[in-house]
Amino acid sequence: METSITIKKNKGGRPRKTDKRSEQLAVMCTLSERKQIEEKAVGANLSISEFLRVLALHGKVDNRIKVLPKEVLLFTATLNHLAANINQIAKQANQFGFLNPMEKEEFILLADEIKKLATNIKLYMT
Image 1 (tube, rainbow, N blue to C red):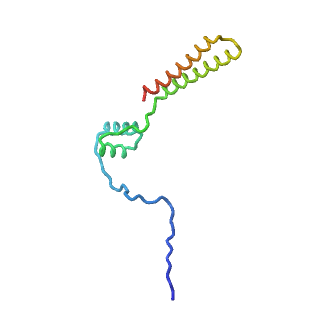
Image 2 (cartoon, rainbow, N blue to C red):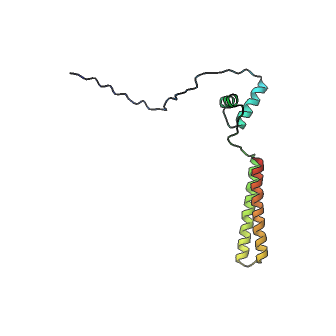
């Protein structure tokens, strides 16, 4: 009496999606329209396919990540660095008695104002 046992070997790899996107849809447009669509997709941090699909199905595309311009990031980083330096100067001056309490408080307020300015710039840009 022979029994046949079949063992399914796991081939590994990525599991198949249950709802695979297998349909292709072509869209005709001009070169300038294509450039605009590509720019908007990049701005939304999406692929062109995903951008068009989301736009068609939901009517709008929410930007996933808002990226601040490099210049704004550098400017706010400089402001934060300046605020940290002012704070260190105030601490050292107070430690060795170079500043009276009123001057120390002015330094601390100045550092706080610079930090708030950097935060407000980032909030305004997003």
